View 1 (cartoon, one colour):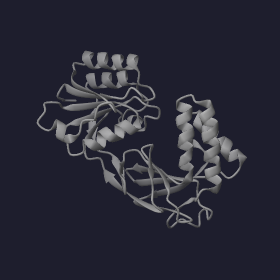
View 2 (spheres, one colour; view 1 turned 30 degrees about the horizontal axis):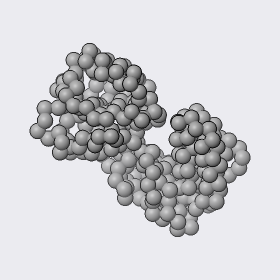
View 3 (spheres, helix red, strand yellow; view 1 turned 90 degrees about the horizontal axis):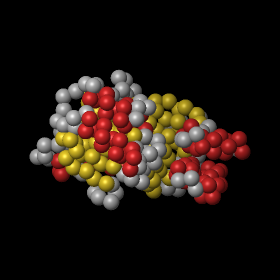
View 4 (cartoon, helix red, strand yellow; view 1 turned 60 degrees about the vertical axis):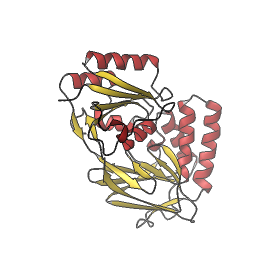
Length: 284
């Protein structure tokens, strides 16, 4: 893959799988691959580079080694830039990296590029009231389960128990979410509705937690790494999605894992990523 070998490296020391040793291993791999780190940013201590910062520079690639939240900030900030973004898994979920590279490690991904692999892609993303989501969004009172996942990530057992109890309470008593046009599928609504951008449209899943078994299922999903693996219904794939709360209360909302205070209804549509991303997985 032809490329300018000058790189702007962005990393986040607070991300889930990002430490001094892994950062040093990445820098060594980049050097061995003939790439030069011309600039580096430690986010959020330093502001992430945006398209305007790179216009007129010789840098051809921004390499971001961080979690999904930092990756969201960097990638969307580079919309309109004619260079490339190399997304590497440096967080807990690493959703976009898995989409682009599979389960490969940062060093393995760089080795693929050094061996001539890789291509650029502009995948489908979500667009809504609060901007873009590169990998997906979650709406409803069940977004509280994200707090339990964060507590699990930081090994805060006491906080995990408290967050899980709060999430269970919200799942039962919170104002549930419904998918417009599909109200009859589950009349009582869902604790959370998950939407994911795909080539065919927006994939929609409805999550519920109605009894003790469902709560235990959610906790098991958190322990294994993703609360979104909990009990759910598949609602289909569609070009546009309208989600509303049954009682008109503001929706809890996560976009790329980052919290927002939603309105009583939120709409999303498919958009296209506005900067080239490097992919090393054949079907990315």
